[in-house]
Image (cartoon, rainbow, N blue to C red; front, side, top):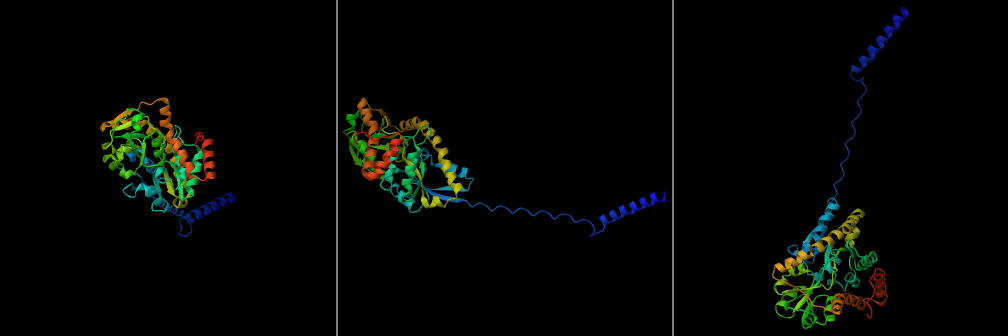
Length: 360
């Protein structure tokens, strides 16, 4: 009994000692130190790329070429890390000087039709020959050929900005058939277009975009070949032409997006991927947009007092009308490329389903 009481007493003493230590300063077990606050991630510095286009954002043409779509998607896909700063169009630099400005690094991104710099990149003419599919895509081997050709002159090829762009004849005098057309002096800015005019039997006149309005107004030319009706709005050419003719003589578009190669190479890989992803997703949307808007654009053309005329063409004349531009583009390739380079380019086109025309 005495032993049992001693054990109880000993247990009470130990418990009291433990309780006392818990409340005596300096005896309690120290609380763990708070975890250090996480170091805030450094703010991602936004990269801004300056861009120039051949048209300005006050015209229907700018909207039709969807450059604003491209800018917005780059910003969204990069979560704001990459921004395209549009500096302007022809008022910033003449289209004929823009490609060289891009090469020199005066700006980073350019949307421009290939006819303005065909001498610098002769292979660029292939976009006049191939026709995009319903998704707005051109054959991969053709894309690779274009990328390599641009890279040689210090430019990175991003891709086509538009892949559906019917081209028409516009005149100040009404024509009902091909015989009427052959009596006209018709202006054009690029050799394949001039080749089309010559092939159908009219008189080709080399013009510059800036001179088209004056040339028509003064009767230097009777008409011109140009892109869809939205292009006519851009230069107010509807004031000096009255007639748009169907069918279009070509349906493919040749406005391309390009970057200065040094700028491209300076971007981190994940932002290069952003730009590539934008182009892949962008093509089917702009293709659907342009095809869906074509009739609406013709209605806009009618709304400013223009008349749309369906030419009376025999089957042979229709074939001449719709094939001459492509044939002229093939001739342009053959005339400007070395024999070795021409055969290489021809091979790419033929493997992609575009054989060289007979008798070229």
